[in-house]
Image (cartoon, rainbow, N blue to C red; front, side, top):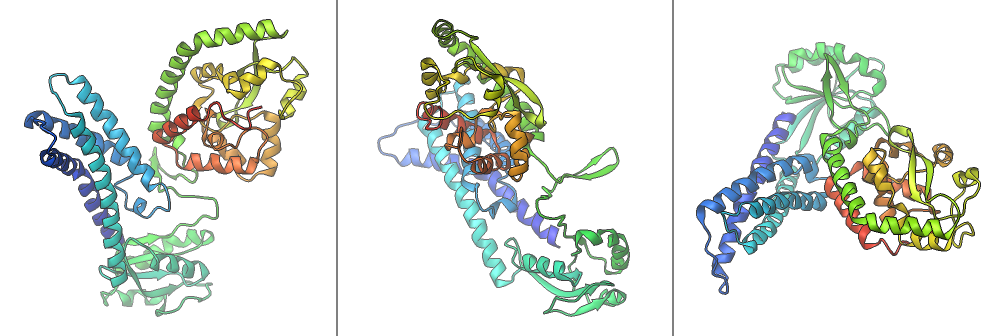
Length: 462
């Protein structure tokens, strides 16, 4: 019953969201028709083809950004960004199709109006579902009658969360007490395991929810055998402790059932394929465009101060592997041990005059595009750190090593928010972890845009 209602709501949400491009095109056509200063002729066949293309791209975007998932309706944050990202993804494809389909003369104003209409309709759909589901929950409509297996503190806290759920209302019809458990639940009758068979004829149970702490999960097979007489679906509440998130990733690996405990977007096809393609194209383009500038910088470094043009240093990257990172040399040649274990500071005496200019404009990092081509780095990701500081921060900062499940980047969410250089490591990790949890190609584009806007105004680039 729980899954049935969840699937029903999900199906309605999915179908409604899939139909939005057709409604958006109809709204755009109506707006053009009523605008007195517009006289655009809309060809039925070409625009019908365009709306079909839009619907297909929108379906892909909807799935990628999770617009069809009921749980995302109630997410605490990120809803507007997901909607915006889906619309940008969709209309980037629509504009490409309209541009290359020269046989059809599509109105730019019509496409723009349909994009605005689609974003507004998607927002309105989300709000409408929230209002309807909340109204049903408050009125108790469509409530699920649940028998809970467990009577201890874990069962009690699980029931509190269950009753406070936003998707659909639940009503607890009873609890099943297991041997060795304390009874701290209330509000509904408590049954012993031997009494479960008597409940089969009462027809008052829609679902059984097994609420056992991780230490007692080995008893599930025995519990399931006793519950067979009820002929209703059974679920288990999983809580494997703080910091272990079950990202609903259960999969079959050669007959072995496996559950992701630390699932990461870095394992997704979008990250592995699309992000890598973008990295290669963007870095290759950047190298071609900035090649004359890099040659001038290299010549200036060679003529201005004795020593190598490039500064090459060990950094920690994906999965904790050490790689050699390239930068233009901005300091006088000195002790390698000192540069590996010491932060740069304002008015650092080790800097050259040209180096101060390069650091202020972030031009010293241009050679890192070659690291991206090699695959050691990405355009966007957590900033790579020196092995000395990684070893130090691992013992001082909680979850510091989580940042290494992604490729390190030339720029990142922490950097564009000012957390770089000799600043708070805890705040930097906070922003890095936010990026890891919320990664998408749209988020990467946002960070790249912010990097370009703030390229010459970085306060901590010294």
